Image: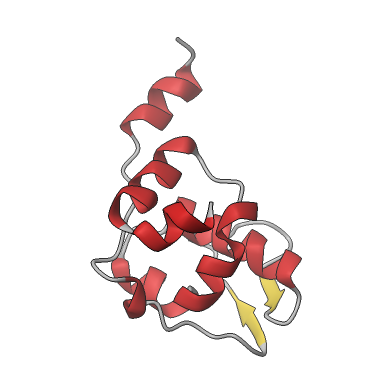
Length: 106
């Protein structure tokens, strides 16, 4: 077992109690704080699904507080993009175990 697979199996991913809690923006440009995105591209155009998908992947992977999920993710956009998001298998399983809508979207 490699270090990365051991880490991935122990990593805890946050999942909201209800998808409707996710009321993040659907328009404009969003800047993620460095605790969520330390890359050169921290600005995301919410009208560009490739930008939004990348932002959602980073937020789901890196969020350590539920308010971060609520602030940056929008539940309708999440359902739309879910099949195309590249996420750690543990994160995907945790979210799909909680939300039938995501299992259907996948």
